[in-house]
Structures are given as structure tokens and as C-alpha cells.
Length: 101
Image 1 (cartoon, rainbow, N blue to C red):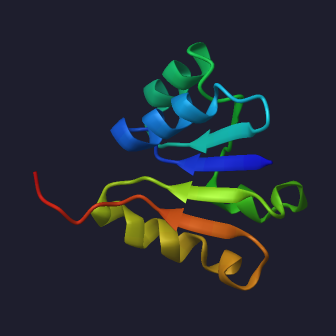
Image 2 (cartoon, rainbow, N blue to C red; image 1 turned 120 degrees about the horizontal axis):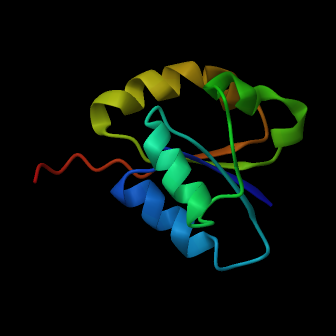
């Protein structure tokens, strides 16, 4: 199964690291912070990246699990960018917390 993680901060990076211990998944990621991408590739938490959120619409990602783990203020923009998935067979989860620290 392909798993796409959008946002490799504390939550998304932890999810990627945890899932990478299983060989049953191909973990891909998108993050605007290229140092987070480089870190995750170096640590083998992810096996590849997406260049843009629109890439998720490609046939190769049909039936992928999409995990959104961006800050709350960015989640709305991400969800709007992924509007085309809401009528597809994809699964979208949002790990955003509305709790203030």
C-alpha cells in the first residue's frame, strides 16, 4: 500500500518513522520544508517524495492512504488543494489537533 504523508513535522515525521519499520508500505511525503524531506530520506522514514500536491491525482496513487499532518492553519489550504480526492477511492485522514499548546 502507498501511504502519502503531507507534512513531516513532529506528527507526520513520527508517523513516517513508525510506518517505515514495516516493509508492507511504500511511504511517500510532501513538505514545503525541503530539510524535512532530506532528513526523512536520509533516515529512511520515507522512500520517496511528491513534487506537488497535484501529483496525488496521478493514477499511480489510486487507492493510496493520504495522511495530512500539517498545522491547522495550513490544513484548510491543503484540503482545498486536494478537493479532487473527495470523489475518488482515496482515503484522507487529518492528524491536525485544534488544541493549543
